[in-house]
Length: 357
Image (cartoon, rainbow, N blue to C red; front, side, top):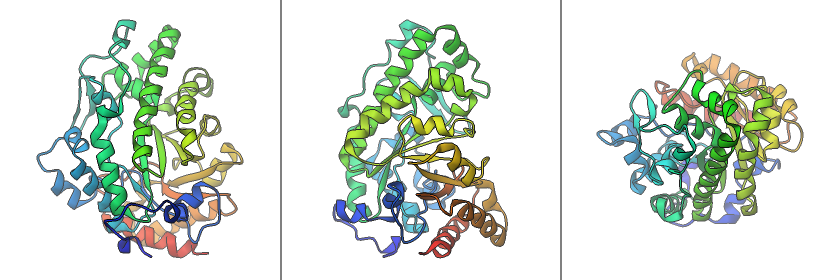
């Protein structure tokens, strides 16, 4: 059955989902073909997304179950991907607990009052399911539409959330973040621990509503050395993964520029570790070590090249994945906004055909 033929209107059958290529690959089981999905597959590259979002702010979009459902489904219909990724933003749980922030076009999340002191920390209360009831509703709507296509839950990792909160917005050098991490390690640890609790609660809401897997995005963690990661970040990430472990759903971990951290990120508790395009996939798997599936890792910019070049680079990824216990084909980061949607559709079809067992 192709993604375009998925049954709709019925809740997902756990047994049907369990046998999906995506979840089988997460569990390092044999698959009929290498499963494909793309980070940021639902978004700016799709004209139908841009039309739907006209005049609606990003955070407002994330809080409307009807929009979340439609946006999440759009790439499944168009591209035939093997999994849907829940449409959201990493700052949604922070907004839900009362943090004053906005997502500004062309900039990203901007926090009105950055967190720099222990008194500031008290503004971060625990997340309750009722704070994000729209997430529960959207996930239930989605699982009724997706049929045999798994839904991946989504959250930002404690370090990346902390970076936004401490810097007040996106940062190139993370100077305020590192100053706090080095200068007041006790406050830093308390901040990340509190964010780990918020993140775990956000993922639990999605799993309990029907998500079949979860991905923890640590977008900025590549800014750290391995020693700093182990000492100052990994305990909080491990707390998130430990909190959702009893649900038995696959846990994916991904960060950008994390070639030196891949093994350590796997040790935080993920079942699947995503690699960006900077490290060949076979080398990434070696660094991650046995017992983990690997996700990645085509350079998103390759999709701007002619079709033959895209296929050549996809072949390199698939060839590097030969012999791995489990491989999920993805980009090494998110879909770029100006990507031709047809290039993504062709790539999904090519990977499926090229990897058919």
